[in-house]
Image 1 (spheres, one colour):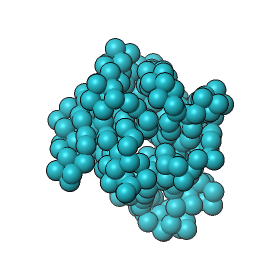
Image 2 (cartoon, helix red, strand yellow):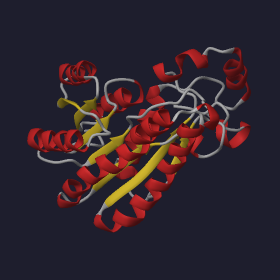
Image 3 (cartoon, helix red, strand yellow):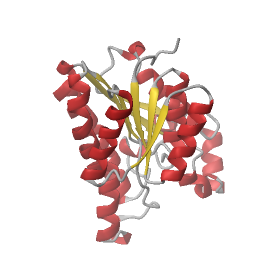
Length: 258
């Protein structure tokens, strides 16, 4: 019996990368999983992989920056499985390390919408369902860039700092109603978002110099998320857990992106 038996999870950005790894891990822990992604084909592929393995899953196309799309995602989750007990806010956008003078207003607004406004919209849609059902757990994907400067460009770093603050405030506001909220700050993880950068000589030298001595895997983040949304983490609220091989706390955050 898995730690998440009889629970229903929504994973945004669930069609690839960190979201896919979490969706698969939550299913292994016996949760029913709603795989939500802007790419409907990828979402369905992950959901089908879960179902083929004997789990329960439903794919939903969602634009996390659009309120009506988000509301539809939650409505489909409730229609399909009757509840929402777990939420992973994973969908997001990177800015290519652009500094403020290199960032257009359109790029700035787009990154804020994808990385921060999306958390507001999704949490607002999920919280009433979660509270009505007696509580639940939320995990927000921040970044090492949310703990120090230099882990991304101006927009990305700003939003990931904001994710940490949003997590703390959400925990303070809804913990008394049975909703636990925490965040994960990934380091350099082997995902399409950072594939090219992770192969540079600079990144290779840094990877060799910190305690973890390797590129992180999406499964590393999924394992942390599965713990944080389980009863094993029942007394953990408002925390931001670095999962970065020790990068931020020992050698700085200049390469810490998810």
